[in-house]
Length: 370
Image (cartoon, rainbow, N blue to C red; front, side, top):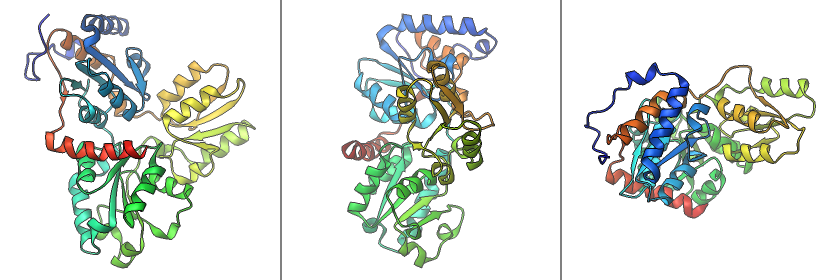
């Protein structure tokens, strides 16, 4: 078997895979994985569809998967079934001998795209005209963000966070500087601050499309938490009316939601937490209990199948899949795996060295806090 070449190598064409039956795609992917043996690791994010997740060596949230890849440096090839920023994080944390592959480069994240580095740079400059920004503001970026934004935080004394450790990160940041610039998801930031009892009049939402984020210099000086105007398109779909519907229709139902949901939904829920928290909580719940779950549809459907002794409902009347995550499908995975088995690396994810170094500093700060 030949050794994998660069992305410029001649590749097996994707078009031929799109017409293959699901059974053939599954069998061929499994065969390519067997041929590659312990040289490859397939990672599947919790939101992936079943036809993809069945081939994953590990499943979980983005940071957990990236850490698993780094811990298993003997695996030369990491096929990350997720979205672009997740594969970037895996490349940041992986060893120099590891190659990270994303089956479809079009698998992005709408929330991550809501904070472009040019906008963040402009925000930082605007803040610098109002106050001594480097001494008073800690940038904190959600891991659901591009590598260049993580690098920005690393370079400016900032940090990354997850939905699980956002509170610890905020406490760390406020212990060092007066203010936090939290991006790109305003809801995770607001819900975390609300849970901490943080004063509402010291929060503001920074709109990157308005001068000074849409605020006066006085308002910026007063605020201690600057929330970027961004959101997750999936979790934005859940509404307070959905919670009320399930409470009326199924008395005793427990409502559990992700902290990327709007605060009006979070405030009406029984429990709030990350995808791993949701999976663990529902899985450990007593048989016969009923749950309305406010997070991505593929994850909820998998819970319904795996936890058949409970009643599990999707907290919306609208089909609500992560559209960009959904781009990773059986044809793309099979194409990437068979190319790799034939000696061709496709969709190699490479974070530039300087960007990687600063981004890793921001991630390491978070790891130390957690």
